[in-house]
Image (cartoon, rainbow, N blue to C red; front, side, top):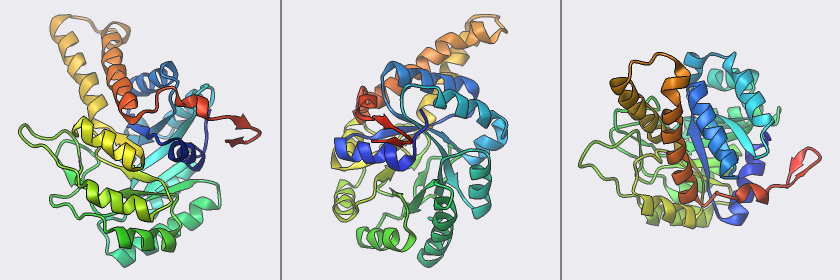
Length: 294
């Protein structure tokens, strides 16, 4: 079932688990995430970046929406890292019911102005908005981009930002980076910053760059109050690594011969992440009454 991001994360906040936002840029990746969410009885977020949307095209969104609306588990369809007001308007027009506006590389004041404009527009049509404060690192292996030097989120500024923009959730910077980390590089998340942020904010907290981070740190972040964690590179890496293996060993050309084990490899990662986020079985926490999920 398709639910709002507010409904999805309100339950996660209350029950103290996190929901995975999995970036899909093909029908195969969508199938792996949706099928595994149902098998694990877990809520999930289908995330699509503007560059991914450009590749899969607007027409693909009809399939995404039909797939999740018919599902017995709760889903949200979310635009990941919209960088402009135009990105947001386009996403709303093609059916996303949640959007992220990333003004993190703007000045603080400019970020507030842009984010508040997006909130006012999106809320008018019941679309949730995620903002970002602070910057996410970039390993150079992801379309989500990022910066070479991370600017950590200031907890006091975060409270001010939420109050002035009215965002429904906030992506924070505590030391993660987009993509797969190079060999020998191990990020260290600043849990003290996260603790200060969660103590000051009532809105759900989002962690970007969730792939390839130490599992113990991600699990700890969930316990400290993160409700949404973005996973992109990990599932794509699993899928295409298995594709390479299959294609190197067989001379097949039919998708139904090549993809089955690739899907299983992806599902394995999705299940592992859901277990780490403690979201397995949590679809039972959502009860549909009328048009609302309680």
